[in-house]
Length: 250
Image (tube, rainbow, N blue to C red):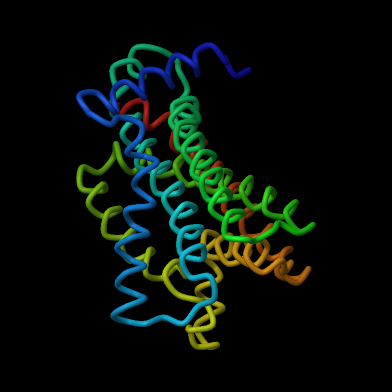
């Protein structure tokens, strides 16, 4: 049974450690997607000249979703090493550390989406009945990020260089995910490979629902659910196999 009070205390500790000594503190988490938006929007509007309808909103939504995924994975790895002494001396499950570490990125995701929708509405747009699927997509996003983090924490404590490997992988995955470009820009021969990435599918579907009031085809919706399910079950299975080994490594 999950100890809610314990998770609250862990979240408070993570928050204090992450922003200790920072002048703007938590507001950096809110500013980051908009700083990225400014840079990428300028480059892809005035230099590369991407022609995409509602490009600012298109780009901002992709950045917000992407940042949540990245923050959850990094915060989980930081939390597992930061609480090394606690885990080595108690029977606290590493999964609890990941769950508590994911809460702050979830709060940031919520607040960033609030700002996004304020801009969205003031721009004269409206939400359609398809919005319910957007909520499902956000739940799938959180499940995917948390599940992957359960595996990452083992490799993080097992291999000293894994953090650097993950840094490189994240950079590659950023450009292999349709964040600054439309999936239509990708050759049909490669689109199927791009869409094996659940984050790519979530971003594409979220934009379709919010910006264009269009639901994905039922077949594509089912594929998204299946991919997230396979990743979540697979990651949890790996976590179950490695959690005892993780305790020894810590």
